[in-house]
Amino acid sequence: MSLIDDLLPPSDIRLQAEGPAAPARAPALVDPFGRHVTYLRVSVTDRCDLRCVYCMAENMTFLSKRELLTLEELDRVCSAFVARGVRKLRLTGGEPLVRRDLMKLVASLSRHLESGALDELTLTTNGTLLEKFAPELAAHGVRRINVSLDSLNPDRFRAITRRGDLAQVLRGIEAARRAGIKVKINAVALQGVNDDEIVPMLEWAHGDGMEFTLIEVMPMGEIEPGRLDQYLPLSVVRERLSERFTLTPIAKRTGGPARYVRVEETGGTLGFITPLTHNFCEGCNRVRLTCTGQLYMCLGQEDSADLRTPLRASEGDARLLAAIDEAIGRKPRGHDFVIDRDHTGPAVPRHMSVTGG
Ligand code: SAM
Ligand code: SF4
Image 1 (cartoon, rainbow, N blue to C red):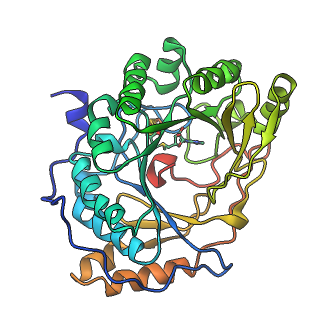
Image 2 (image 1 turned 30 degrees about the vertical axis):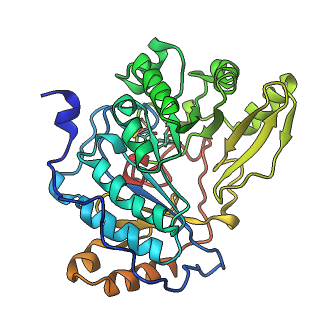
Image 3 (image 1 turned 135 degrees about the vertical axis):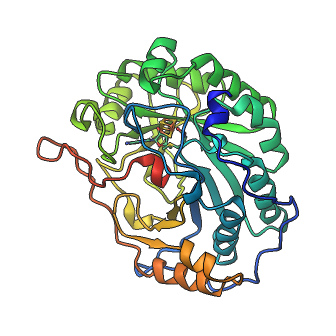
């Protein structure tokens, strides 16, 4: 059995490409601060075929397969959110493409694209399995994806991911682009690890017509070494980049902590995701579902709502929808991530792979 087979949960569903239609439109999801929740990120598995140093411990304990929502249940929750006005779904993890039969879920969810209820179905992936799945993703209406890649140096890539093969990821990116999927490259900026590669990676991505986004490392879950060693504020990176490039702010907004500039010299778009140096929580439009059915209303807070119990309590969605409403009513104003000498531990105990990045 290959490593990937080993990671795959058993086939737990007989999803049909033609699933039930979304329930009739109901009122929009609006939180206590007047923010409309229109974006759901779904962690379909906590498992991963890599072990990035900033994301996971070397020896992670993963959930037992029994604890996961089935693909059918994930479809039901996603569809309930779509019925309540969510326009964008992002599948993430863990590594979403290691979830067995994920393509059945993608195929099923694509009915909401066809009906016009959903604007976008997308995923965030480490790219290791993209070569295999890119054509199917494209066939099911996935138009853009984010690929996380922190180095273009094969040895360094292996060290950061503790096992990854860079060539495999590059082949995956190529396969996605050949299939007509737009690829955005996301890199976590790591002090003393890949800070010297930021310019070459930007030039590589833009040279190939891909957007490039830098992410500040967030204090989620215990890892070795500590965050203080890894943390590189993007305010510093931006200052350094502007000595070399002309960075023109652009209006593009995704309702998250990213801000974008055009790099005049390359003509490409560069994003900065700065939850630490600037959190932009006031415009937050998203919530996150874990693979066990916990809904986190904020990436940086511990409060969550159990959607699995109402989901399993009946075949109808009334209880589920009531639980979603109740949860949105508790969405906090924002998070308070800090990394400095007084705050070297995690702000939240769960790893990013649990909530989905
Ligand atoms: N496995 C997929 C991948 O790597 O793209 C999806 C899940 S991963 C948790 C999603 C994103 O979160 C990746 O871009 C990853 O680099 C980022 N990430 C993980 N842990 C992080 C942390 N502690 N701080 C900032 N970003 C993190
Ligand atoms: Fe896996 Fe993505 Fe976390 Fe890396 S960042 S260990 S690829 S879940």
